[in-house]
Length: 596
Ligand code: M6R
Image (cartoon, rainbow, N blue to C red):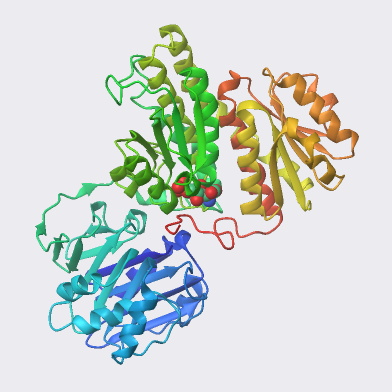
């Protein structure tokens, strides 16, 4: 998965492309490149981050171009494999996001016909295919070339002597930004917000051609498509650091607002609007990856509690291997980006199985929203840090709302219960703000434990998935081996691993699991592990069992995952800071994973 931008306008393309590309670096950062199409093609690429490219690149003259930041899938992250990739005559350049699954056969065929290849990438077949088809119409040549490739892609193509950027997509994101005397394409609206907020989302199979003063879209059959632009309400500030040292910290601190926005207009009336009139679901299946999967695990407890519907949760990439359920479940697909290939694949599989589907997504107009019957948007705003934070807490909000909806429909929720839930939801921004106010205490504690090599996270019931998510944050940001367990499982094996060098983070809020949690904490501290607990303010018992504690304001336990995870996000952030890790761009992972 990679980031692509394209520009055709009245200004020099190079600085604009670089500027936009930097906002896409979260999509991949192992190599980058830029091509400007003047009378000749000027192409410059390098291994490493965009900063490396910027420092080394010569000035390029011309007002039409494309740029790319890469997360390698086929071929090592080297300069030759960086995009854009050119044809034999160095006249055409192509940037690609996705995978061409049949590239081997296509490449052999092209080589037989005399085309020279210089990289190990699947992408390189595309400039050669376009070259073979190109006479005087770049759009037609791209359409012809598309007939020969299978897989997933966004392609952006420029050609020396042409005043246009041609782009197309299949199962990878592509948006057009409309300016005054200039137009843009990008993988993500956040890349373009500095220049425009008028966007057109390109659909699968469409080919778009932008010049400085025109945007033409044709569908897979060559028919012209007219589509009104959407006005994006996110502003540039939303996509910049705003004084914070990292996007992750900014996004953690944005959570009170993100939660508030996600509730806005949705809880004013306790009579919720049904997504599926007169539909009754006897089971729910939640499907997602990574952090979104852990949100789904929390969702299981919420839905079973509020709607009394048995719920299972599955990793997206495993969903297709599961047996078809006789019960015809409601399938809920959670994905912040809305572009995760595994989750999109699962959505299609659910449709094939004849299930009704709900998507929980953050990015408006993203691919998942076209695959599902209904979308609940999380309204978290753009999330740039690779670690999901505000999108996780707002996914939990969406799950509370969904559970209320289902509970209303099947009458397992009384009006009084709903009123009380709404009251608690309204207070969540304040609970989160209380946690944020303790950031410096959490930082001091994280510093104390930052040299640990292993760290275990334990919780029970609805806070068990929060232990898993805390461990994931610690792994991906602080590079500490973090593992989450249901606290009751330690004695079935993991206790063998613990020692005084492996701190235990225990979620021990006062709920129906509290006494058992104290027992589990005793088991680990008796074996020498330091314990850091997260508990409710006013708990006088917990300090007797643990070495350190972080306190959150008491709320109904079913809602405690929200403030607790904010503690663990700050915990992981400050561990990473103390260890000098590249927080917004952890090694080997990218924000949006558009390969299976
Ligand atoms: O965009 P999605 O929610 O579908 O992404 C799923 C995972 O790739 C994502 O949550 C990942 O685990 C995060 N980087 C974790 O912080």
